[in-house]
Length: 107
Image (cartoon, rainbow, N blue to C red; front, side, top):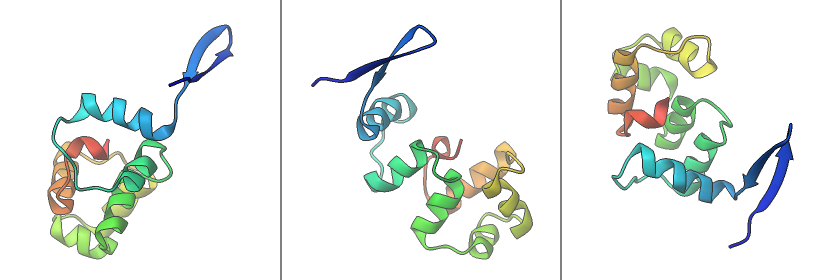
């Protein structure tokens, strides 16, 4: 398969389709298969929104439902989703557990 090559500030970069990039990147994150559809994973890797928000919406949770399931306050969850706070490791683990996803998808 042919990929385009571009130069930025004198350095070569290969352009690959997002799906291929996600597949390469996800191999280093987790060897376990995911039940998350490719289009949702592509949104996460493209950083279209915060991964917590993308996965929460995919699972059909409201912020309040996810906050309750993760034993967090809704305002704290909102701050994580908007990027105002990174979220503690404990909070991210609780969110990943509530969403039934690998925690590596959230960071």
